[in-house]
Length: 401
Image (cartoon, rainbow, N blue to C red; front, side):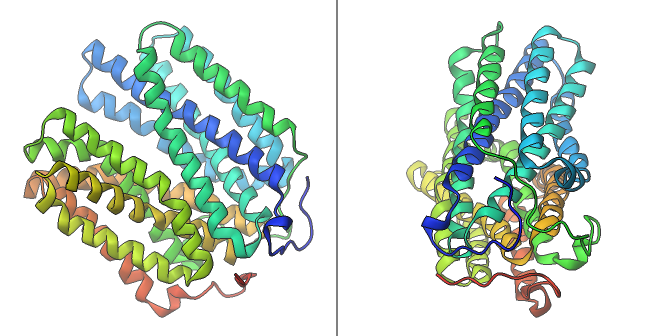
């Protein structure tokens, strides 16, 4: 279904349900596949006796691909439309999995992971732009929250699949090819999508920093939190005296909280001030960082803290996407979400480095310190009146729950 003209429906009956299900279904299948290969390649390198720096470098490469793809997606979306881009991203991923299955050369792995990040960036940017434009304003928070919940759960399923298949043989790759083939099906059930407005945008990815600095810093902070947690939260647990098994569970409860709490946070964003909800998410980000060292040796309290703390803190991105859909339309919305890919990538690259350095200087508690500082930075930006307002000239859609 091509979307043209002004689209401002206000109830569930106005929601393009078929498109919603198709886009979320496609991106979730992509997420499952994507989340299989990061741990798979890391474990294969570990088995070969590779250094930690080499393993970390390979894990970082997809973020660079995501950042670079962000610069081309808005133009390609305007020229080719959303469905063709999603189909292209899926077919590229199938090709990359087959290539990965047939080679064990390290250089090829780096190229494959880079291209995988590039195609993944296309899929996520197009999906988030598409969903935002077909969603009624009064339901935007809940739809984006549902999207992030489903995506978070899909990323949790990938490692679970790998734990059952093991890392040897072709089975993990064949499952990935099967999942990607399934992702084609929902896209065949909908017609094309193109941005609501094809007018020339008034900003680009680089100047977006001046247009909406609050959204930029929010995206950066969430990425810093996500990637620092994935890399160093278990390390923090072990250095604080936990067993390896308990430390591994820390990441599990943090990830589950980050998934299941997004719909409630989106619901709050539909019924209350979205900026206010973002502030609350930031305040809980600070509170969790303060509490963590005091609950680290009480497992049930630790897991509950991680579930709430990381889950609510992750809600910053749900609100960020919702505000982007409220403030921008058409090509400008596509550029805004493409900008998120760039600044998410920068935050993702910076997070493990900054948190690791902090832990080297201040010991294990350097990890919650950086989490608290990043949440404080977000709160500071939220308190600046100019940043709290919709960008001048933006086609703001008012929420009417």
